[in-house]
Image (cartoon, rainbow, N blue to C red; front, side):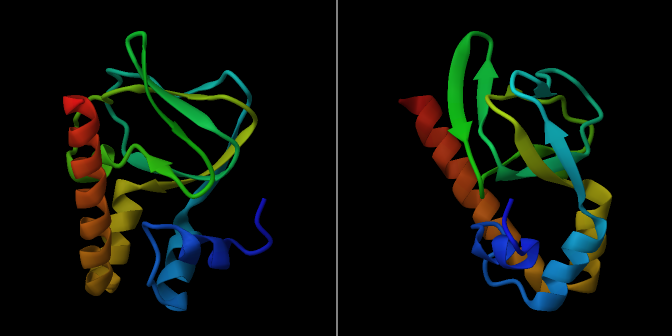
Length: 141
């Protein structure tokens, strides 16, 4: 676990460039969750997922059917579609490969942050657009 979640968030691609105040607002609402090795974090097809996950420690695997789509570790995030498209079913399973700690940020908390700090929305949109482009490229290969 990083010594300072504030500094850790500033080093992640999603929150790089955020001010100390913006990071503090995120940490004030984010929930820390622990997952055991083998535990399913997100189930494909489930509805009602309103949050996304930022990995603080551990590793996860993203699967669709029997196909492994990605592996994520500290600093990576998943479940971001829940922030962008309300009431959309989860598009893949995410399973902890080892003991994993995540910060969970809900759709409502992120919207409150963006209301208070609208300039942060541009940075998040740019990062999510990069993620979407990377996913599209992966699916075409």
